[in-house]
Length: 376
Image 1 (cartoon, helix red, strand yellow):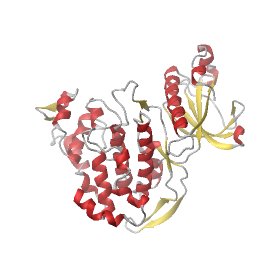
Image 2 (tube, helix red, strand yellow; image 1 turned 90 degrees about the vertical axis):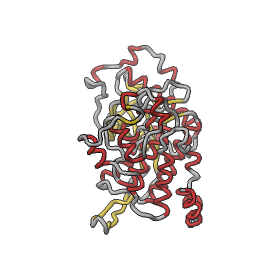
Image 3 (cartoon, one colour; image 1 turned 180 degrees about the vertical axis):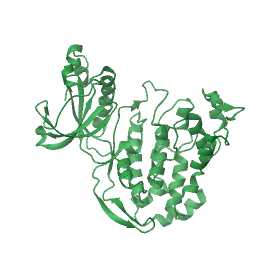
Image 4 (tube, helix red, strand yellow; image 1 turned 45 degrees about the horizontal axis):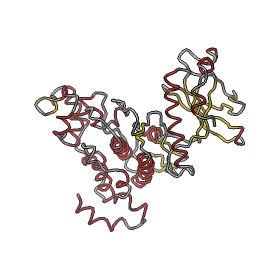
Protein backbone atom coordinates (compact mmCIF):
# COMPACT_ATOMS: atom_id res chain seq x y z
CA UNK A 1 0.00 0.00 0.00
CA UNK A 2 1.42 3.37 -1.00
CA UNK A 3 2.21 5.67 1.94
CA UNK A 4 -0.44 8.38 2.10
CA UNK A 5 1.96 11.32 2.05
CA UNK A 6 3.84 9.91 -0.95
CA UNK A 7 0.77 9.96 -3.18
CA UNK A 8 -0.46 13.37 -2.12
CA UNK A 9 2.87 15.06 -2.80
CA UNK A 10 2.98 13.84 -6.41
CA UNK A 11 2.92 16.37 -9.24
CA UNK A 12 -0.44 17.83 -10.16
CA UNK A 13 -0.02 16.69 -13.78
CA UNK A 14 0.22 13.08 -12.61
CA UNK A 15 -2.76 13.51 -10.30
CA UNK A 16 -4.92 15.08 -12.98
CA UNK A 17 -4.51 12.10 -15.28
CA UNK A 18 -6.01 11.67 -18.73
CA UNK A 19 -9.27 13.52 -19.38
CA UNK A 20 -10.10 11.12 -22.24
CA UNK A 21 -10.61 8.47 -19.58
CA UNK A 22 -13.25 10.51 -17.73
CA UNK A 23 -16.85 11.61 -18.21
CA UNK A 24 -17.69 15.33 -18.08
CA UNK A 25 -18.49 15.13 -14.36
CA UNK A 26 -15.29 13.31 -13.44
CA UNK A 27 -16.30 9.63 -13.35
CA UNK A 28 -13.82 7.09 -14.71
CA UNK A 29 -14.97 5.57 -18.02
CA UNK A 30 -14.79 1.79 -17.78
CA UNK A 31 -16.44 -1.40 -19.01
CA UNK A 32 -16.74 -4.88 -17.53
CA UNK A 33 -13.51 -6.78 -18.10
CA UNK A 34 -11.24 -3.74 -17.77
CA UNK A 35 -8.23 -4.41 -15.51
CA UNK A 36 -6.82 -1.65 -13.28
CA UNK A 37 -3.21 -1.75 -12.07
CA UNK A 38 -2.76 -5.18 -13.74
CA UNK A 39 -4.74 -6.52 -10.80
CA UNK A 40 -8.38 -5.46 -10.42
CA UNK A 41 -10.73 -6.84 -13.11
CA UNK A 42 -14.03 -4.95 -13.14
CA UNK A 43 -17.06 -7.24 -13.00
CA UNK A 44 -20.03 -4.95 -12.35
CA UNK A 45 -21.12 -1.57 -10.94
CA UNK A 46 -22.47 -1.85 -7.39
CA UNK A 47 -23.47 1.76 -6.77
CA UNK A 48 -22.92 5.43 -7.51
CA UNK A 49 -22.69 8.55 -5.34
CA UNK A 50 -21.58 12.15 -5.51
CA UNK A 51 -18.03 10.95 -4.71
CA UNK A 52 -17.79 8.46 -7.61
CA UNK A 53 -18.71 4.81 -8.12
CA UNK A 54 -18.28 1.46 -6.38
CA UNK A 55 -17.55 -1.56 -8.58
CA UNK A 56 -17.18 -5.27 -7.93
CA UNK A 57 -13.80 -6.62 -9.00
CA UNK A 58 -11.84 -9.84 -9.12
CA UNK A 59 -8.53 -9.20 -7.35
CA UNK A 60 -5.98 -11.26 -9.29
CA UNK A 61 -3.37 -10.65 -6.59
CA UNK A 62 -5.67 -12.36 -4.10
CA UNK A 63 -6.41 -15.46 -6.14
CA UNK A 64 -9.38 -13.88 -7.92
CA UNK A 65 -11.25 -13.11 -4.68
CA UNK A 66 -14.14 -10.68 -5.06
CA UNK A 67 -13.68 -7.19 -3.63
CA UNK A 68 -15.44 -3.81 -3.78
CA UNK A 69 -13.49 -0.96 -5.35
CA UNK A 70 -14.48 2.64 -4.64
CA UNK A 71 -13.39 4.80 -7.60
CA UNK A 72 -13.32 8.48 -6.63
CA UNK A 73 -14.08 11.19 -9.21
CA UNK A 74 -11.10 12.89 -10.84
CA UNK A 75 -11.78 16.19 -9.08
CA UNK A 76 -9.64 17.93 -6.48
CA UNK A 77 -12.30 18.26 -3.75
CA UNK A 78 -13.12 14.54 -3.96
CA UNK A 79 -9.42 13.61 -3.93
CA UNK A 80 -9.02 15.68 -0.76
CA UNK A 81 -12.05 13.97 0.80
CA UNK A 82 -10.60 10.58 -0.18
CA UNK A 83 -7.34 11.51 1.53
CA UNK A 84 -9.24 12.09 4.78
CA UNK A 85 -11.22 8.86 4.41
CA UNK A 86 -8.06 6.81 3.79
CA UNK A 87 -6.52 8.35 6.90
CA UNK A 88 -9.52 7.18 8.96
CA UNK A 89 -9.53 3.71 7.37
CA UNK A 90 -5.81 3.28 8.04
CA UNK A 91 -6.40 4.21 11.68
CA UNK A 92 -9.21 1.63 11.89
CA UNK A 93 -6.98 -1.05 10.35
CA UNK A 94 -4.20 -0.15 12.75
CA UNK A 95 -6.46 -0.30 15.84
CA UNK A 96 -8.47 -3.33 14.67
CA UNK A 97 -6.09 -5.60 12.69
CA UNK A 98 -8.28 -8.67 13.27
CA UNK A 99 -11.47 -6.91 12.07
CA UNK A 100 -13.42 -7.52 15.30
CA UNK A 101 -15.20 -4.19 15.57
CA UNK A 102 -17.73 -4.45 12.73
CA UNK A 103 -16.21 -1.68 10.58
CA UNK A 104 -15.58 -2.31 6.89
CA UNK A 105 -11.99 -3.28 6.20
CA UNK A 106 -9.87 -1.36 3.68
CA UNK A 107 -7.62 -3.75 1.77
CA UNK A 108 -5.62 -1.35 -0.41
CA UNK A 109 -5.67 2.02 -2.14
CA UNK A 110 -3.96 3.50 -5.19
CA UNK A 111 -4.05 6.38 -7.68
CA UNK A 112 -5.33 5.57 -11.17
CA UNK A 113 -4.95 8.51 -13.57
CA UNK A 114 -6.20 11.01 -11.00
CA UNK A 115 -8.82 8.71 -9.51
CA UNK A 116 -8.17 7.63 -5.94
CA UNK A 117 -9.29 4.00 -5.71
CA UNK A 118 -9.94 2.22 -2.41
CA UNK A 119 -10.51 -1.54 -2.21
CA UNK A 120 -12.65 -3.13 0.50
CA UNK A 121 -13.97 -6.50 1.52
CA UNK A 122 -17.04 -7.23 -0.61
CA UNK A 123 -20.25 -6.87 1.37
CA UNK A 124 -23.92 -7.31 0.45
CA UNK A 125 -27.13 -5.25 0.63
CA UNK A 126 -27.47 -2.32 2.99
CA UNK A 127 -30.00 -2.64 5.81
CA UNK A 128 -32.05 0.05 3.99
CA UNK A 129 -32.02 -1.77 0.64
CA UNK A 130 -33.12 -5.01 2.32
CA UNK A 131 -35.93 -3.14 4.12
CA UNK A 132 -37.01 -1.56 0.81
CA UNK A 133 -36.95 -4.93 -1.02
CA UNK A 134 -39.10 -6.30 1.82
CA UNK A 135 -41.80 -3.64 1.21
CA UNK A 136 -40.64 -1.82 4.36
CA UNK A 137 -41.86 -4.57 6.65
CA UNK A 138 -40.01 -4.12 9.98
CA UNK A 139 -37.18 -6.36 11.13
CA UNK A 140 -38.09 -8.79 13.95
CA UNK A 141 -37.02 -7.51 17.36
CA UNK A 142 -34.49 -10.30 17.95
CA UNK A 143 -32.76 -9.33 14.67
CA UNK A 144 -32.86 -5.64 15.64
CA UNK A 145 -31.17 -6.58 18.91
CA UNK A 146 -28.25 -8.31 17.16
CA UNK A 147 -27.85 -5.55 14.55
CA UNK A 148 -28.11 -2.81 17.19
CA UNK A 149 -25.46 -4.47 19.35
CA UNK A 150 -23.00 -4.59 16.44
CA UNK A 151 -23.73 -0.97 15.43
CA UNK A 152 -23.25 0.27 19.01
CA UNK A 153 -20.06 -1.78 19.29
CA UNK A 154 -18.65 -0.39 16.02
CA UNK A 155 -19.45 3.24 16.82
CA UNK A 156 -18.25 2.87 20.43
CA UNK A 157 -14.95 1.67 18.95
CA UNK A 158 -14.80 4.84 16.80
CA UNK A 159 -15.56 7.05 19.81
CA UNK A 160 -12.85 5.31 21.86
CA UNK A 161 -10.45 6.26 19.06
CA UNK A 162 -11.55 9.91 19.09
CA UNK A 163 -13.67 9.67 15.94
CA UNK A 164 -17.26 10.68 15.19
CA UNK A 165 -18.80 8.98 12.13
CA UNK A 166 -21.28 11.86 11.48
CA UNK A 167 -23.25 10.06 8.74
CA UNK A 168 -24.89 7.05 10.36
CA UNK A 169 -27.97 5.82 8.48
CA UNK A 170 -29.41 2.45 7.33
CA UNK A 171 -27.71 2.89 3.92
CA UNK A 172 -24.30 2.90 5.63
CA UNK A 173 -24.85 -0.37 7.50
CA UNK A 174 -24.35 -3.36 5.21
CA UNK A 175 -25.08 -7.03 5.66
CA UNK A 176 -22.07 -9.30 5.12
CA UNK A 177 -24.44 -11.82 3.47
CA UNK A 178 -28.03 -10.94 2.53
CA UNK A 179 -29.45 -14.42 1.81
CA UNK A 180 -32.99 -14.69 3.14
CA UNK A 181 -35.88 -17.06 3.72
CA UNK A 182 -39.50 -16.39 2.80
CA UNK A 183 -41.80 -16.42 5.83
CA UNK A 184 -45.59 -16.08 5.64
CA UNK A 185 -46.81 -13.04 7.58
CA UNK A 186 -50.31 -13.94 8.77
CA UNK A 187 -51.10 -10.40 9.94
CA UNK A 188 -50.13 -8.80 6.60
CA UNK A 189 -51.30 -11.86 4.62
CA UNK A 190 -48.16 -11.93 2.50
CA UNK A 191 -44.73 -13.49 2.33
CA UNK A 192 -41.92 -11.49 3.85
CA UNK A 193 -38.17 -11.79 3.56
CA UNK A 194 -36.34 -12.83 6.70
CA UNK A 195 -32.58 -12.24 6.57
CA UNK A 196 -30.70 -15.43 7.46
CA UNK A 197 -27.59 -13.81 8.95
CA UNK A 198 -27.75 -10.40 10.67
CA UNK A 199 -23.97 -9.84 10.73
CA UNK A 200 -23.34 -6.25 9.58
CA UNK A 201 -20.49 -3.86 8.83
CA UNK A 202 -20.38 -0.08 9.23
CA UNK A 203 -19.24 1.69 6.04
CA UNK A 204 -18.59 5.14 4.52
CA UNK A 205 -16.04 6.99 6.61
CA UNK A 206 -15.80 9.88 4.14
CA UNK A 207 -17.28 12.31 6.68
CA UNK A 208 -15.74 10.80 9.83
CA UNK A 209 -14.09 13.47 11.96
CA UNK A 210 -11.37 13.17 14.58
CA UNK A 211 -11.98 15.06 17.83
CA UNK A 212 -9.09 17.47 17.11
CA UNK A 213 -10.20 18.28 13.54
CA UNK A 214 -12.42 21.10 12.29
CA UNK A 215 -16.09 20.26 12.92
CA UNK A 216 -18.37 21.26 10.03
CA UNK A 217 -21.49 23.17 11.06
CA UNK A 218 -23.88 20.86 9.19
CA UNK A 219 -23.39 17.09 9.36
CA UNK A 220 -25.51 13.93 9.03
CA UNK A 221 -28.20 13.03 6.54
CA UNK A 222 -31.34 15.03 7.42
CA UNK A 223 -33.50 12.29 8.96
CA UNK A 224 -30.73 11.22 11.37
CA UNK A 225 -29.52 14.72 12.35
CA UNK A 226 -29.31 15.47 16.06
CA UNK A 227 -30.97 18.60 17.56
CA UNK A 228 -27.64 20.14 18.60
CA UNK A 229 -26.59 20.13 14.92
CA UNK A 230 -29.80 21.82 13.76
CA UNK A 231 -29.48 24.41 16.54
CA UNK A 232 -25.76 24.95 15.81
CA UNK A 233 -24.72 24.28 19.40
CA UNK A 234 -21.61 22.33 18.42
CA UNK A 235 -21.46 18.53 18.30
CA UNK A 236 -19.37 15.55 19.32
CA UNK A 237 -19.80 11.79 19.80
CA UNK A 238 -23.41 12.05 21.12
CA UNK A 239 -24.67 13.11 17.68
CA UNK A 240 -23.84 9.57 16.47
CA UNK A 241 -25.88 8.12 19.35
CA UNK A 242 -28.94 10.16 18.29
CA UNK A 243 -28.53 8.83 14.72
CA UNK A 244 -28.40 5.24 16.00
CA UNK A 245 -31.65 5.81 17.88
CA UNK A 246 -33.33 6.99 14.66
CA UNK A 247 -31.93 3.98 12.77
CA UNK A 248 -33.18 1.45 15.32
CA UNK A 249 -36.64 3.03 15.26
CA UNK A 250 -36.67 2.65 11.46
CA UNK A 251 -35.75 -1.03 11.73
CA UNK A 252 -38.56 -1.49 14.27
CA UNK A 253 -41.32 0.50 12.57
CA UNK A 254 -40.37 0.15 8.90
CA UNK A 255 -40.50 3.92 8.32
CA UNK A 256 -38.35 6.96 9.06
CA UNK A 257 -39.04 8.67 12.38
CA UNK A 258 -38.42 12.19 11.03
CA UNK A 259 -39.91 12.52 7.54
CA UNK A 260 -38.98 16.11 6.79
CA UNK A 261 -36.55 18.29 4.85
CA UNK A 262 -36.90 21.55 6.80
CA UNK A 263 -35.22 22.60 10.05
CA UNK A 264 -38.20 24.29 11.69
CA UNK A 265 -40.50 21.41 10.74
CA UNK A 266 -37.87 18.95 12.01
CA UNK A 267 -37.83 20.70 15.40
CA UNK A 268 -41.65 20.70 15.49
CA UNK A 269 -41.61 16.94 14.87
CA UNK A 270 -39.11 16.49 17.70
CA UNK A 271 -41.44 18.34 20.07
CA UNK A 272 -44.42 16.30 18.91
CA UNK A 273 -42.52 13.04 19.47
CA UNK A 274 -40.34 13.88 22.48
CA UNK A 275 -41.77 16.95 24.15
CA UNK A 276 -40.48 20.55 24.44
CA UNK A 277 -36.89 21.42 23.52
CA UNK A 278 -34.95 22.32 26.73
CA UNK A 279 -34.67 26.04 27.48
CA UNK A 280 -30.88 25.82 27.79
CA UNK A 281 -30.60 24.63 24.20
CA UNK A 282 -33.02 27.26 22.94
CA UNK A 283 -31.20 30.10 24.74
CA UNK A 284 -27.76 28.91 23.56
CA UNK A 285 -28.79 28.32 19.95
CA UNK A 286 -27.42 30.42 17.11
CA UNK A 287 -30.75 29.80 15.34
CA UNK A 288 -32.99 32.19 17.29
CA UNK A 289 -35.10 32.71 14.14
CA UNK A 290 -36.81 29.39 14.92
CA UNK A 291 -38.06 30.64 18.30
CA UNK A 292 -40.30 33.33 19.77
CA UNK A 293 -40.33 34.17 23.47
CA UNK A 294 -38.44 31.01 24.37
CA UNK A 295 -40.71 28.65 22.44
CA UNK A 296 -40.59 27.12 18.96
CA UNK A 297 -42.23 29.55 16.52
CA UNK A 298 -44.66 27.07 14.97
CA UNK A 299 -48.26 27.24 13.77
CA UNK A 300 -49.82 23.82 14.32
CA UNK A 301 -52.89 24.85 12.29
CA UNK A 302 -50.93 25.62 9.11
CA UNK A 303 -50.52 23.09 6.29
CA UNK A 304 -47.09 22.17 7.67
CA UNK A 305 -48.56 22.00 11.18
CA UNK A 306 -51.22 19.55 10.05
CA UNK A 307 -48.55 17.46 8.30
CA UNK A 308 -46.45 17.26 11.47
CA UNK A 309 -49.50 16.33 13.53
CA UNK A 310 -50.35 13.53 11.07
CA UNK A 311 -46.79 12.20 10.80
CA UNK A 312 -45.60 12.53 14.40
CA UNK A 313 -46.87 11.09 17.66
CA UNK A 314 -45.26 10.45 21.05
CA UNK A 315 -42.51 7.86 20.69
CA UNK A 316 -44.14 5.10 22.76
CA UNK A 317 -47.32 5.34 20.67
CA UNK A 318 -45.31 3.40 18.05
CA UNK A 319 -44.95 0.28 20.23
CA UNK A 320 -46.02 -2.82 18.28
CA UNK A 321 -46.31 -4.91 21.43
CA UNK A 322 -46.31 -4.41 25.19
CA UNK A 323 -43.88 -7.27 25.70
CA UNK A 324 -40.92 -6.47 27.96
CA UNK A 325 -38.32 -6.52 25.17
CA UNK A 326 -40.32 -3.95 23.17
CA UNK A 327 -40.48 -1.62 26.19
CA UNK A 328 -36.77 -2.19 26.80
CA UNK A 329 -35.97 -1.14 23.23
CA UNK A 330 -38.04 2.04 23.55
CA UNK A 331 -36.43 2.85 26.89
CA UNK A 332 -33.06 2.56 25.13
CA UNK A 333 -34.31 4.76 22.26
CA UNK A 334 -35.41 7.42 24.75
CA UNK A 335 -31.93 7.38 26.31
CA UNK A 336 -30.28 7.61 22.87
CA UNK A 337 -32.51 10.49 21.78
CA UNK A 338 -32.33 12.66 24.87
CA UNK A 339 -32.28 16.27 23.65
CA UNK A 340 -29.30 17.17 25.82
CA UNK A 341 -26.12 15.64 24.35
CA UNK A 342 -24.54 15.52 27.84
CA UNK A 343 -27.48 13.46 29.14
CA UNK A 344 -27.62 11.11 26.14
CA UNK A 345 -26.51 7.56 26.93
CA UNK A 346 -22.93 6.78 25.84
CA UNK A 347 -22.48 3.63 23.78
CA UNK A 348 -20.36 1.77 26.33
CA UNK A 349 -23.34 2.10 28.70
CA UNK A 350 -25.83 1.30 25.93
CA UNK A 351 -24.08 -2.03 25.32
CA UNK A 352 -24.89 -2.98 28.94
CA UNK A 353 -28.57 -2.03 28.59
CA UNK A 354 -31.20 -4.68 29.55
CA UNK A 355 -32.34 -4.80 25.91
CA UNK A 356 -29.08 -6.56 25.06
CA UNK A 357 -29.13 -9.03 27.96
CA UNK A 358 -30.35 -12.01 25.86
CA UNK A 359 -27.17 -11.69 23.74
CA UNK A 360 -24.98 -11.97 26.85
CA UNK A 361 -27.10 -14.43 28.85
CA UNK A 362 -29.57 -16.27 26.58
CA UNK A 363 -32.76 -17.21 28.42
CA UNK A 364 -32.25 -14.79 31.31
CA UNK A 365 -34.06 -11.70 30.04
CA UNK A 366 -36.97 -12.31 32.45
CA UNK A 367 -34.64 -11.60 35.39
CA UNK A 368 -34.56 -7.96 34.28
CA UNK A 369 -38.33 -7.47 34.17
CA UNK A 370 -38.73 -6.07 37.69
CA UNK A 371 -35.61 -3.90 37.64
CA UNK A 372 -36.56 -2.58 34.21
CA UNK A 373 -40.09 -1.68 35.29
CA UNK A 374 -38.72 0.13 38.35
CA UNK A 375 -36.30 2.16 36.19
CA UNK A 376 -38.98 3.47 33.83
